[in-house]
Amino acid sequence: MPIKTSAAVTINAPLAAAFETAAGIDARALIQKHGALPGIIHVDGQDAPWSAVGQKRRHTLSDKSCVEEELVVFVKDEYFAYRVHNFTGAFGPLVREAKGEWRFTAVDPRRTRIDWTYSFEPRELIAKPVLWFIVKCLWPGYLKAALARVKEKAEQN
Image 1 (cartoon, one colour):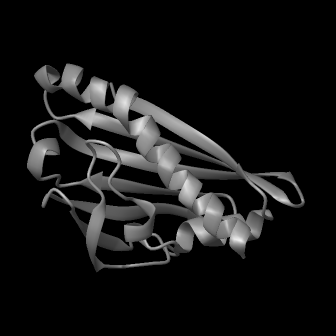
Image 2 (tube, rainbow, N blue to C red):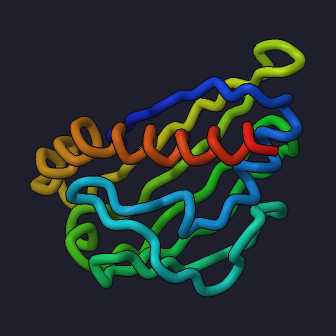
């Protein structure tokens, strides 16, 4: 059973602009160190923007670990989802894979809600309590901080 968490933000920007900002933001600007969780410092492969199913990239994180990411769903101005796998470092023994999903909803013509959900599949049953703590206690702040950066960038345009 996956362990899930999510965060949401409402952006003062039209749906198309919010989607374009989120799909096009540089991964290094989006995912920055937050508390004990590392940020992305280098990207190999598809840098940005996400725009086609099958795009892949490999991230090197500030703790020197790596992870691979693949875009698995892309519906312009509505939804995109990706698979994260091949974790190294501290997450390697804990996580088999993770899935990220971004959903975009027009609140009105000038505001957009973004819902971002992460779902983690533990590698082993013994890893589940540690992974549960990270996902439920640390990950929401990580997501909220990243969404705040998307909001700031989208509202500047």
